Image (cartoon, rainbow over all chains, first blue to last red; front, top):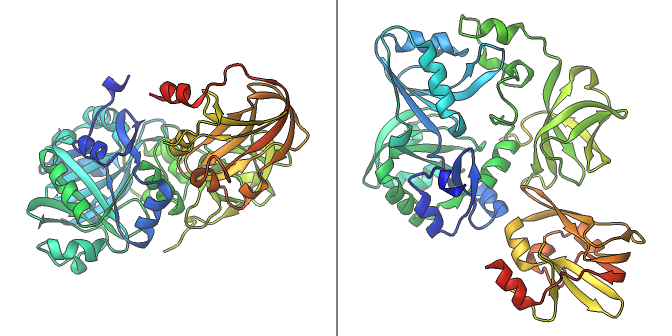
Length: 351
Length: 123
């Protein structure tokens, strides 16, 4: 089975750092190096980095690129100027999402789309099937290594080693630079709720860059910490909070859907929202994905992600709950016992 | 990995210390390392009757919940209440402060192995 798992260009680097590797969306990925708690704390208080090379990169070029991207996504891509990044989605025809994505505007007629690792093939087929106009569309996923450097000390750690003034680069900026001798593209984006940069580097150079970043004292972090960090920050994760059947209108990400025409709009906006995605906190025992949410003994929802928050030191979870049950006392059924749960505003941790 | 030679081991990664008719049970150094940071331990009630192979404890790490099995048939006579406030003891000191429960047994699993055999099994 292991033979079938894909490897990022940093696979050997992870083994050298004695990471614990796990299968994730078809990839053999590091779940942790020193420990989830320690890695989580490094990102919250200092600076850590993640191998996110498994994510996919699609390029769109040509005079029709903007119009095409506008036609397949709900956010307003026309607002996206060169050097800027935007969170967006790929709605399906049935009302759910094919994927949630990031679009980077590289130049007036050139965009890079970053998609979730396990969805690369599906997204490619979906986009290909809708392709129209003067657009050159290509899958560059194998060409790129991607390293997310995240944490309050990300800027000060990278600044002495890069040829641009990072203090001038706002959140969601995209720019090219030379970082420790490597030609890279950086985006001031991330998935941890902290400041930071996602560094795109040619796949064959990724391991060298990673080693140099380790030498700067940046803590290597695995998928375990990435999940606890994004959950504290209230970020939905495809396959958990989003999927082919769940509408973003039931989440706190409904803002992505702008008043414009796009593929799948009718199905997406036409569905009734009977359940809402909410944040839950529990007293002691962690709620996990799939655990039932109850009100007065009746099933009213399901947990989509849950963990013990390393920062808040208590269990946090996201769950879809019937709109009618919100405002009532809720419990999460943990191994046959009902644990009281409080609905709280997302994100759990506000920065 | 530490594997004390005075203990017995289950292939499900529990360690067992036998004193007369009572066993103390915890999880091995290997198991705690695989689980990662332990954040919550759900212990059985004292007085509960248990059977060999029955899941009676849940150890929760940041990422996942794992069942721990009783290696004996008998009655739970003690549980490590201190883990309520400091579950990390399972990571830091799995063979002493991180113990989980004690069972006064009438029957012990015949699949328990010694330290050497457990280590071989791990390889």
